[in-house]
Image 1 (cartoon, rainbow, N blue to C red):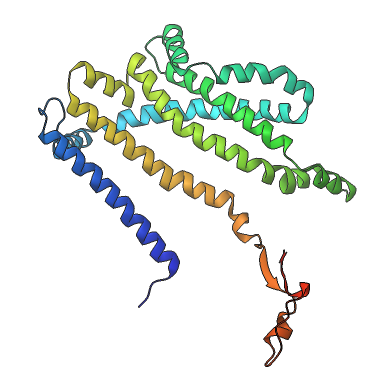
Image 2: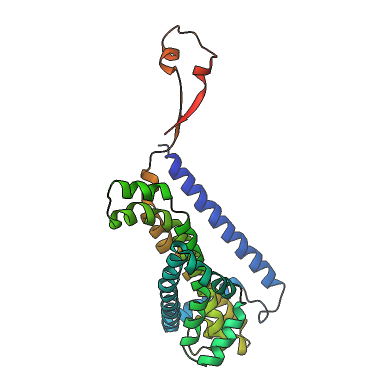
Length: 290
């Protein structure tokens, strides 16, 4: 039984992905065989250590700590950044007031935020959370402002001409235009927030994935560093594939339901008739229709 084209493409994509992972592990295994174990341990040695850490329960505890700090900072930044972005996109005075400040905040080196957070909050969980807020907020605000400015004024005017309520205007015009900008900014910033939170935890945390990586480094245990790194990568990939991709499909399901532009031939009925002559006139040219 032949498989559907979409199924074949999915299986081929999975096969290439597994081949890439296998190639990486093979290169890692070969490199580890040429070095001392304490410099670069073998993949199976790291996998064994990962199993030991998972059995002890320390992995779940530290990942929950990092997850809570990241999500808390990200949500606060999304709420504040969306409000600022709405004002900047809606009112030119607000755009003039906030734009330069937010643009400057977006260009501050992240290590500066990390150092300042450690100085201000010390060894605590507020350091990673505050750095995530400072990092995510400018990107959300700028993207939401760009989305607001891209709203079609003709659609807004037509909605007002037909006496549509503000709720209908927001639901059918503003939000569909704004969502691609906001979701793209939120998705990228959330992925980067994990790395930034781990960085701050490495220098000034008392728990979390970054703290465990820094602790392993100070103990000169490359095996533990690689084990926690693999946990981090696996968690981020699972979060991306299981949560963010599904959320994107649900939010933008209307795109798949929107009729696609097709092509047709003028005079196709006449050309399809038995014995009908083929014309080369302009009437037979391809045109794009909705």
